[in-house]
Image (cartoon, rainbow, N blue to C red):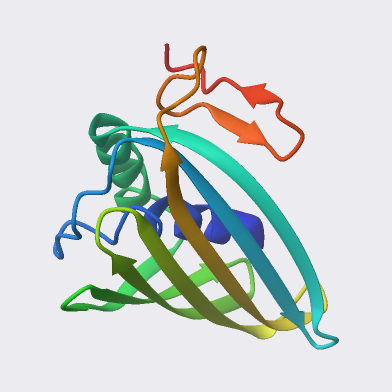
Length: 164
């Protein structure tokens, strides 16, 4: 269930936060996303990198999914200050309350950096907290054979989204 909360954050943060705040439109094409996730206690860190083909219609589709996630989550606060967007959420997953604050900073239409700090009360799968850092950057046009929503893993394998 913790992963579902992070999927919602991943869907929302590189594209922007919910529609009450309007993030800048991002360039259409291939984007590389590097994710670093550090769990506590123990500071166990995992890293992953993926690329995704995106356009404005795909971004709007993902945004609508993120806005309609029904996992016992409540938006506590959402704000924008220039190119920085902040959202605080409270989610209840079984007996655990997940309190999170995400801050995304956009550098024009070609890069974004987001950090999400979460606490789990009581501990969730032995974890009491988590820090997720994501850096996204535009890398060029989508390669032949990739359509919006398709992902490319670090080894070059293309995963089709099934939307086409």
